[in-house]
Length: 230
Image 1 (cartoon, rainbow, N blue to C red):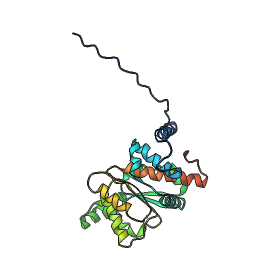
Image 2 (image 1 turned 180 degrees about the vertical axis):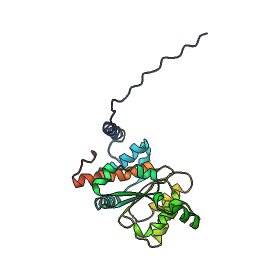
Image 3 (image 1 turned 120 degrees about the vertical axis):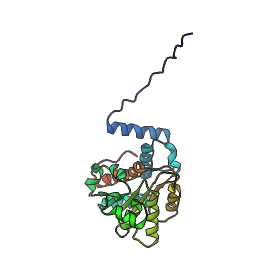
């Protein structure tokens, strides 16, 4: 008997094809799939929705921990022209200059700090944690973005417990199976302004997405561009 394959169903493509229309279409789909009442509203929804968009996962909204206090602290830091420190170059790459340069914001990956390899070997720790500890006295008023290394987040919490001046905002979203969930749970218990995504999920892209959402809000307040529709 000759095998005759079943006819395949047609694949319907969305007509959106430019970066702006794709993003707008994505946000519209998320809004439709997650109608009000939502866990987050207003500007916090703008942050949460960008996280959902970045990971392609509507379920993460239940594990997001966002607050209005943290949002305002982050936006004000950006408006003041802060430095955004990232634990990886990947997270830094996710922060486009078109959003940050108009605000006078700079981005510094911790991995780019000079002498980091030698410092990590001397301390017998990871480069991310060693770099984080070397920044302890310079964090005040700035934003710390940790999307990859639980050791960096744990190091940040340690130096803060030891009395280091706190940053304006901590975006703590390391990903993985070893101490990622634990480090974020410890962050959740602190009073320092922070955004986090509980559990194993996270990553540099979603951590950067939080800052991008805050930058959109800051730009809108400065009158430099329109923030995405709420």
